[in-house]
Image (tube, rainbow, N blue to C red; front, side, top):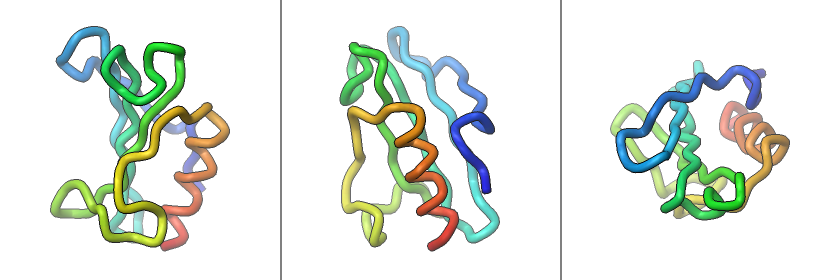
Length: 85
């Protein structure tokens, strides 16, 4: 299973934001962002969104929105849940 340590962050192109995107074998993926305009970014936490082949997916058992204020271990937990969909 992929976890936070498998993410590669790059500049997100807005402000001082960084983003990592990873797709999983089941067709789902995750976008992980941190920056001044993300939920929790200004205090060093992360915001995630579930992805599918079409882009953002708000129709999974994981969430129907983005999830913010996450620590690195919490991001890993969500990554594992998404991989199990």
